[in-house]
Image (cartoon, rainbow, N blue to C red; front, side, top):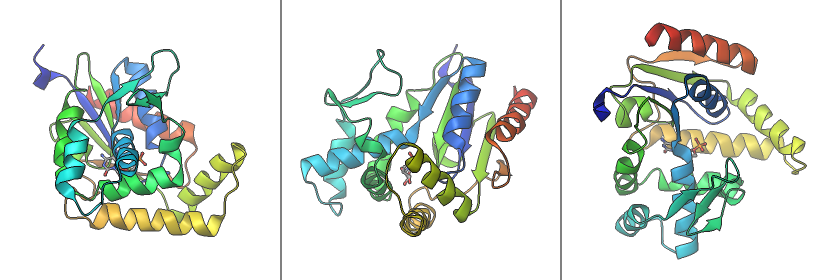
Length: 224
Ligand code: C5P
């Protein structure tokens, strides 16, 4: 099968809309590959911190992006290694989220990560989750979904996640950080976060995870 004909389902939207969960679920049901593109931006953010490179040095950040030594442990699901070091927890911290959004605003960094993302497109298919899957990386996706939810609801979900993990959190700080990241992601010049013209936009504010999953699965069945 030619790579081009491998179907892609693009799931985009801001943090806290449940896109990661639903993308993983669809990939599992269809037995498709899964690309969580945010992980690449998170890894690059941590790599930039470790290398001590300034965010104003786009060329150096892009150079780092091209040479990123990433692996996913097959022994433990969800384990991500950067230069052989387990950074799975570090990339999920607020610092990891903020660095990801900062490197994501650098056009050279985005171009450098493009090829890596395209490599995930393998038979029988791919579910790709991110901000620009439907608008830039996989413009020919067979199905494009853009999930939204109110800022308050997304902050509430994040708060609950942290508290459930035993991590101290403050709603006011979460709200501020989320809105800053939203603004950076949607106002940047390079691949801003916007729904593709042909995307199905689904507001998940008042929907349970299971309802989001069933609505998305219906769209998937119609598209394939
Ligand atoms: O999806 P996740 O929350 O893990 O993404 C972290 C950050 O990485 C986002 O806030 C965004 O700035 C950046 N990102 C991006 N493009 C993508 C995926 C993530 O700019 N396709």
